[in-house]
Length: 188
Image 1 (spheres, rainbow, N blue to C red):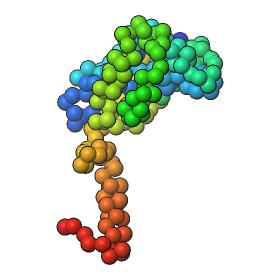
Image 2 (image 1 turned 30 degrees about the vertical axis):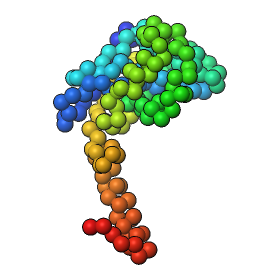
Image 3 (image 1 turned 45 degrees about the horizontal axis):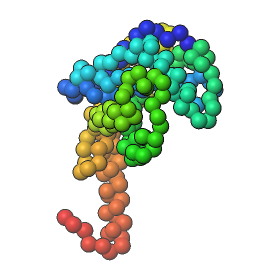
């Protein structure tokens, strides 16, 4: 793949006034085993971010170095078709020890003073407030990516996408029906 000098990102959500602090990732395949992950810097409040070629290549190289399964294939083997999706901070939040176990990789050392600083940056993103359907972009035909995101609704302590409200209602009704069948009293 011939990586462009700049790849621009614009998040779109007509219901949100602040699309800042969101991390979007690209999944890049070399056609050999595991794909590589490359991330845009956090978005500004207007939902935009820019990924520079040097950062893309550095992250690609670090992702290859970190692959303990021994993937092969360099950037020249990579497909220009990339998947674009929101970064998921949940696994890093759930396992602090695992997230901090790796030393900084060569490109990361240029950007971060410590693994703790890199980790703090990742988990401070606002990604859990939004949802988006992944899309595929061809970096040979476009250097501008537009990703439509939706603000999550909140139900108690559980954040859910607006589409999931119906599923939660069905789950609640199912739970009530089971309790009624079992003869358990219901709160009103």
